[in-house]
Image (cartoon, rainbow, N blue to C red; front, side):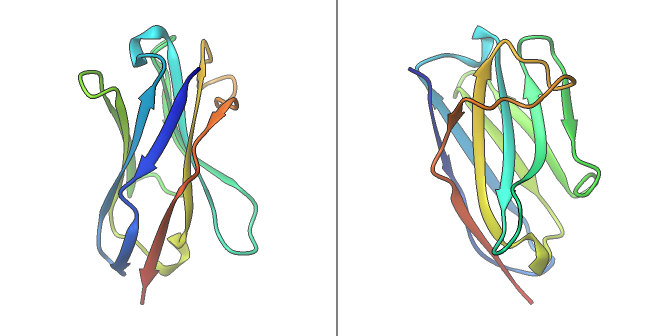
Length: 124
């Protein structure tokens, strides 16, 4: 079974950067996995941030964070990253990654294998 584990969260000052990692086990990225990053802030709905798919090579970054966040993958480490720059207090949330095979990011984000999340707190 596919499992994903997030790491890299923490406390950072506004304007700072963090790189979150989503380590995948039970499958390799090149098995056609799609990986997406979401976040859920206090009292807010879950929000999709970025997606990449090895199934068809598609990817996207949500308009709300485009220009500050980027997604990338490392096949050798079987890990997908979310690079976050120019962080703002409004970025404070639990960040989660999710995986699913054979999904195009242009159709819908993956929905099946969720991690537990990593907390990101941005102080002003």
